Image (cartoon, rainbow, N blue to C red; front, side, top):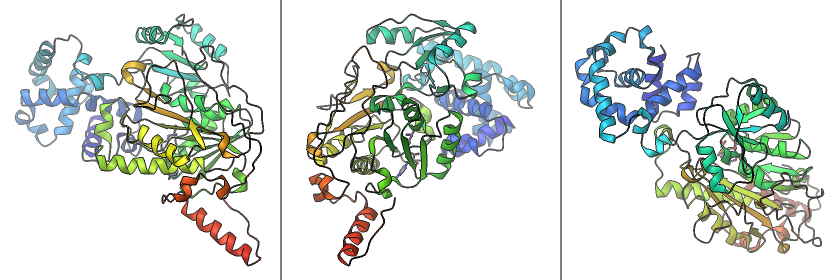
Length: 505
Ligand SMILES: C[S@@+](CC[C@H](N)C(=O)[O-])C[C@H]1O[C@@H](n2cnc3c(N)ncnc32)[C@H](O)[C@@H]1O
């Protein structure tokens, strides 16, 4: 049943009928983790398995597999690279009959590639799937010290990491052995374990005390650094990694308004926020962020925003990404479409009357979705927001003149490919200051973040409307929020007619 189900899912994925995750999620096969491991394994080794099938002519010789190429690939993968679980299936005979041919073709491939391990046969990009295991300590539930103590009591060894340079730090991470870990050089609550460390069954993970996510996912909230008590929006929030991290930085003070237009993703986000103890400060809304009215009174204190919109995902280190995407490949047309959408979301976030600081991120490597969007939005801002130089000690900078932004890469930073930019409001904006004093969320003795929240204007106050909207936006034909514009027009018309209007979200 496992192999047949894995084969069915692989066929559907390759026919672009769904992604690995959604298909496994909707499968009736109970052990999803086991199914996921088999499907991903086959997709990872897809090219090598195809070569071996071609050379051994297995599909031609074996009648039982002739009409079942996906099943054949699953079986070959299981025999050569997996757990060899055929022993318990009726396919064992077919595999055993071809055992010699299969193993000798694999050996030939390794000799030709001058490698001794199966893994080294994988192309550079697919081998890089194996990033270190990043573990964020959830400060809403526990402390870093308690988590360290627990791991040490389980015979994990902490590697000393005292003020290393970035290159030294990366080397330490690269050389981590099983059961070793170190503290991340940026985020104080982030621990880094050797690649392949699986903590999904660990009680700290199950209780929500630790969160397993790649490092780049934690950068936006870390860079945003909202002071305690802030009101923050997360424009495209599900499945909620950045929202819950923001709530942890705020220590559940203030408010995080989280929007997502995908109901299913929002439902799993709801579970996550409860599991990690962050639901108190988070208000989830199932809606298109572009339809949120920035002038609604409930958002009048929103000073910070995370903008992490849908993107091409081209930075995610996995061949699975190409194989599992139901979208068309990253054509110029698609990138243009994505960039337009991303710019609209970012502009909309910048339109909130009291906004001070906005972090924009993508897991894309394409300049169109990164520097291209930032350039367009910076011009649109007309000086009312400027880019903040973030994490200056990181070597990966934005392309061209966008060196204030950060680019993370698997080779250099041992993370997925990622882009982050941070905008702050300038004195030209005439807005409110955040009410609470700025509390630095993380101490960073390397001076790695310029927490430049200094919007020095105190004077001009505006609760919204055009006074607060960048000039260029007025001239722009981009429909930043068509429904809000319509409402404002109606409001003005009704005022003229002497009727009162209540603002709504
Ligand atoms: C890259 S994911 C966000 C990941 C999330 N920030 C996290 O860290 O867990 C992009 C999300 O944007 C949502 N989305 C796309 N268009 C949207 C829109 N117009 N309004 C709100 N959410 C949107 C998608 O449903 C998807 O969940």
